[in-house]
Length: 584
Image (cartoon, rainbow, N blue to C red; front, side):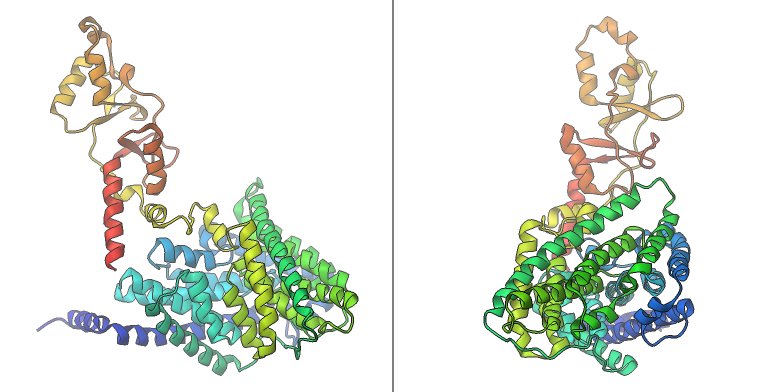
């Protein structure tokens, strides 16, 4: 009789082979997890907010009324708590969406299970204390990690794993905004980067299930208070086109200031674990004068959408301050999303431009709230390069068909202009800065997903640098290797020679052979690698000098040889990986 574990494994294998049933049942499970995860994360933020600032009905009002020193203390103290977390777990920094995209492109959809708990904790701490970030990015990472964990439970194929990750991402966005269609489009347009019918149906199921769970746990409450909308005049469409252009330029500013700030913090001569505290102190200082930048900022967005009388100059100032505050929060190591800040920046920019249009075209311009609403969509489109996601998320929040035409004009123009100036979105630019370019084809990305330790061989022959030439000839006559690292008395690499180098010496006068030692033959300027370097970088090194083997050092910066890597082994590993991915 088969053991129980084997029978369970066989049952799972049979279940997995029933393609449609397997995908749909797991899509439902992931949707449930994503819905509970999104709701749980929101409650965790509220819990931390009440711990930090006491009970309140309106977060913005509460921040406005607390003493100035408290605004400095809480974000700084939270930064001190956050510092050790990001020091030991670097993946907790930032938005979370690029990490999901990276996993889909390079790691077959595999995300570490610890991402769920640690990302939730780090992001809730950042947001609740006043960090100028959103909750959408962390929720996407939480949902995607749940999808990845489901796939890893079955040890399923890469293609299915990516589908499960997209199901989690779709459910996360859907549950956050009560927008199931936008959740589906976010997963396909931004996370997957492609549309395939086999992905579509499970993603829809997860998105709908997550929305239903969120409704039950948090209520069917809209994310924003949306004003009634109407197109006053056909001339207004030109206004929205101008708004789309402005949103693209501000989106580019936002994207580049964010990463320039991150570079600035990286260059600071202080330990990494102190960066979040510095960022918290800066945010607290800004919050003394502009409490609107604290936290997610939905209360301020509601204020602008409702058309409350706010000076246009103040709205423009909030646009700039929010960009700086979000850049400082994330650049210093805070954890949170860029989606909500994009909505905030779009609302304040749109509101300010609405005042301008009313001054230029009085009687032919919709209320300020309408321009703020369209500005939100245009800013999301410009930063993420996901116009369909931006259009659908605003439409699902309004359920008003009259907003579609202005929204489409602004979002498409914003995306086109932003992409024309800078090809990378706020998500993909982070990957490019790591050397991962999802637009440059599979070859580079496949090589970047493989590492030296997977192809290196630990069998090699070291040669002491004082070895006489006759002994070298005896060595190579019995050796199967072509390249020989030369080491000093401490066993550290000083050079390398090949069979071709020896052949050239053989042609010299025979009387010189007794005077030559290994050190004289060896090439001193040795290109090396290390076990955790990716194979894309190794292939560049092979091409630089047209060599066939490279010594592998113990670690980066070390001179202790632990192996050799051959060009042909790299090519073979690439071919195997490509065949595996084609079959999955």
